[in-house]
Length: 129
Image (cartoon, helix red, strand yellow):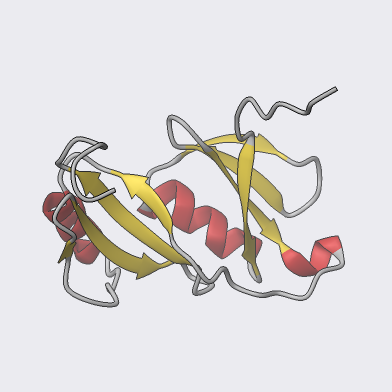
Protein backbone atom coordinates (compact mmCIF):
# COMPACT_ATOMS: atom_id res chain seq x y z
CA UNK A 1 0.00 0.00 0.00
CA UNK A 2 1.31 3.43 -0.94
CA UNK A 3 0.28 6.47 1.02
CA UNK A 4 -1.27 9.13 -1.19
CA UNK A 5 -1.45 12.70 0.07
CA UNK A 6 -4.51 14.32 -1.49
CA UNK A 7 -4.24 17.81 -0.04
CA UNK A 8 -3.30 19.94 2.96
CA UNK A 9 -6.00 20.34 5.61
CA UNK A 10 -4.50 23.29 7.50
CA UNK A 11 -1.32 25.09 8.44
CA UNK A 12 -0.70 26.05 12.07
CA UNK A 13 0.84 29.33 13.18
CA UNK A 14 2.05 29.67 16.78
CA UNK A 15 0.96 32.52 18.99
CA UNK A 16 1.76 33.74 22.49
CA UNK A 17 -1.47 35.75 22.73
CA UNK A 18 -4.51 34.05 21.23
CA UNK A 19 -6.83 37.07 21.53
CA UNK A 20 -4.36 39.46 19.85
CA UNK A 21 -3.70 36.92 17.11
CA UNK A 22 -7.44 36.30 16.58
CA UNK A 23 -8.02 40.06 16.29
CA UNK A 24 -5.21 40.38 13.74
CA UNK A 25 -6.22 37.52 11.44
CA UNK A 26 -9.93 38.32 11.60
CA UNK A 27 -10.04 42.12 11.65
CA UNK A 28 -6.73 43.29 10.17
CA UNK A 29 -6.29 40.65 7.45
CA UNK A 30 -10.03 40.07 7.09
CA UNK A 31 -9.83 36.28 7.08
CA UNK A 32 -13.04 34.37 7.71
CA UNK A 33 -13.04 32.61 11.09
CA UNK A 34 -14.33 29.04 10.85
CA UNK A 35 -13.66 26.62 13.71
CA UNK A 36 -12.72 27.28 17.33
CA UNK A 37 -10.95 24.30 18.92
CA UNK A 38 -13.40 23.85 21.78
CA UNK A 39 -12.24 25.84 24.81
CA UNK A 40 -8.59 25.77 23.70
CA UNK A 41 -6.92 29.01 22.55
CA UNK A 42 -6.85 27.93 18.92
CA UNK A 43 -8.94 28.83 15.91
CA UNK A 44 -9.06 28.27 12.18
CA UNK A 45 -9.40 30.91 9.45
CA UNK A 46 -10.25 30.34 5.80
CA UNK A 47 -8.22 31.78 2.92
CA UNK A 48 -9.99 30.16 -0.02
CA UNK A 49 -7.59 27.28 -0.57
CA UNK A 50 -5.80 26.74 2.75
CA UNK A 51 -7.03 26.89 6.33
CA UNK A 52 -4.77 28.85 8.70
CA UNK A 53 -4.92 27.71 12.33
CA UNK A 54 -3.59 29.91 15.11
CA UNK A 55 -2.57 28.02 18.25
CA UNK A 56 -1.39 29.47 21.55
CA UNK A 57 1.75 27.40 22.05
CA UNK A 58 1.83 27.12 25.85
CA UNK A 59 -1.75 25.77 25.98
CA UNK A 60 -0.54 22.81 23.91
CA UNK A 61 2.57 22.18 26.02
CA UNK A 62 4.89 23.73 23.46
CA UNK A 63 7.50 26.45 23.69
CA UNK A 64 6.65 29.39 21.44
CA UNK A 65 8.83 29.62 18.33
CA UNK A 66 7.76 31.87 15.49
CA UNK A 67 7.82 30.46 11.97
CA UNK A 68 10.96 31.07 9.94
CA UNK A 69 9.44 31.23 6.45
CA UNK A 70 6.48 33.34 5.37
CA UNK A 71 3.00 32.17 4.51
CA UNK A 72 2.22 33.67 1.09
CA UNK A 73 -1.31 35.08 0.85
CA UNK A 74 -2.49 35.46 -2.74
CA UNK A 75 -3.89 38.91 -3.58
CA UNK A 76 -4.83 40.38 -6.95
CA UNK A 77 -2.84 43.58 -6.40
CA UNK A 78 0.11 43.57 -3.98
CA UNK A 79 0.53 47.37 -4.02
CA UNK A 80 -3.14 47.99 -3.20
CA UNK A 81 -3.22 45.30 -0.48
CA UNK A 82 0.01 46.65 1.01
CA UNK A 83 -1.43 50.16 1.08
CA UNK A 84 -4.54 48.88 2.85
CA UNK A 85 -2.48 47.11 5.53
CA UNK A 86 -0.12 50.08 5.95
CA UNK A 87 -3.20 52.27 6.53
CA UNK A 88 -4.07 49.86 9.39
CA UNK A 89 -0.60 50.37 10.91
CA UNK A 90 1.13 47.28 9.53
CA UNK A 91 4.85 47.71 8.86
CA UNK A 92 6.53 45.81 6.06
CA UNK A 93 10.07 44.47 6.43
CA UNK A 94 11.27 45.68 3.00
CA UNK A 95 10.17 47.22 -0.27
CA UNK A 96 7.86 45.15 -2.46
CA UNK A 97 9.95 42.67 -4.44
CA UNK A 98 9.55 41.75 -8.10
CA UNK A 99 11.04 38.32 -8.77
CA UNK A 100 10.47 38.46 -12.51
CA UNK A 101 7.35 36.30 -12.20
CA UNK A 102 5.62 37.66 -9.08
CA UNK A 103 5.33 40.55 -6.63
CA UNK A 104 5.94 39.91 -2.93
CA UNK A 105 5.65 42.09 0.17
CA UNK A 106 6.63 40.66 3.58
CA UNK A 107 5.24 41.71 6.96
CA UNK A 108 4.69 39.97 10.29
CA UNK A 109 1.79 39.08 12.56
CA UNK A 110 1.75 40.24 16.21
CA UNK A 111 3.98 37.28 17.21
CA UNK A 112 6.59 37.91 14.53
CA UNK A 113 5.47 35.11 12.21
CA UNK A 114 6.42 36.24 8.68
CA UNK A 115 3.57 36.65 6.21
CA UNK A 116 3.63 37.71 2.58
CA UNK A 117 1.31 39.37 0.13
CA UNK A 118 1.89 37.56 -3.16
CA UNK A 119 0.74 37.85 -6.76
CA UNK A 120 2.13 35.78 -9.61
CA UNK A 121 1.80 37.76 -12.85
CA UNK A 122 3.59 35.27 -15.12
CA UNK A 123 2.41 31.74 -15.95
CA UNK A 124 3.62 29.10 -13.51
CA UNK A 125 5.75 27.50 -16.22
CA UNK A 126 7.49 30.83 -17.08
CA UNK A 127 11.13 31.32 -16.29
CA UNK A 128 14.12 28.99 -15.98
CA UNK A 129 13.55 25.40 -14.94
